[in-house]
View 1 (cartoon, rainbow, N blue to C red):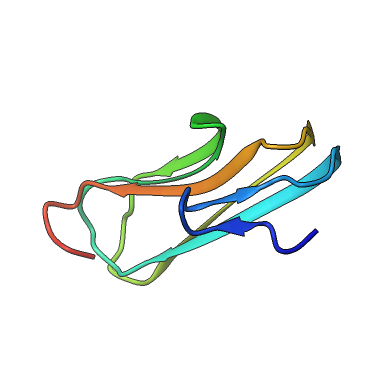
View 2 (cartoon, rainbow, N blue to C red; view 1 turned 60 degrees about the horizontal axis):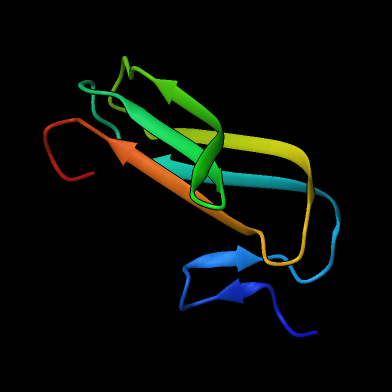
Length: 88
């Protein structure tokens, strides 16, 4: 049935119902200020997320995972947010 990724929706679109394990990872450039958030969204709603307050200037990696029963047409996206006050 083709691939799962849809450029139009910037998401993975489920083409076959079932139980899925979804994992995403984001690497942030180091900054000792602000917070970082990484999350998995299901149909535009946050399903699982991780938030941290960095304490050093080294590269920070965040990963999120979920296991869920998904249906045809469900959309999965990986989201990231940071508030360091600068571009990371």
